[in-house]
Length: 136
Image (cartoon, rainbow, N blue to C red):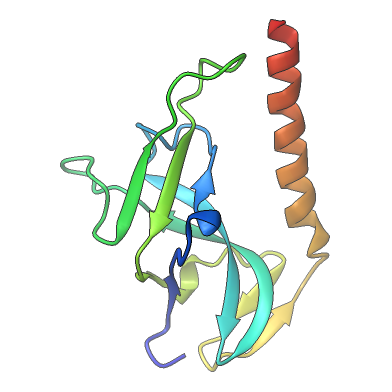
């Protein structure tokens, strides 16, 4: 890793991040689940802590597009949003490394069960569906 950074990029609309809670208007940081590719090796989806808005004006950081999804059924208390990245750089140390880590030399180490990341996402989606169902 020459620059000791990850470059996060949203090449297509289908790669955009949709529905994260509090992303639409209020969040300054987000945990972004993105594919980690180092020197041509794809290490799958990992969690990276990303600053998405500046602290002074609360505007998106350069290279980030972010917005609110608007009204939705059954979960009005959350301002769910969308986000896209245009070659946005974050330090390598922003990788949440409890389960996996990338060293400065580009080596990748698995420290736990990678399925845990996926199960967290599924659990969150279940809570959203439950909230919508309770509104009916």
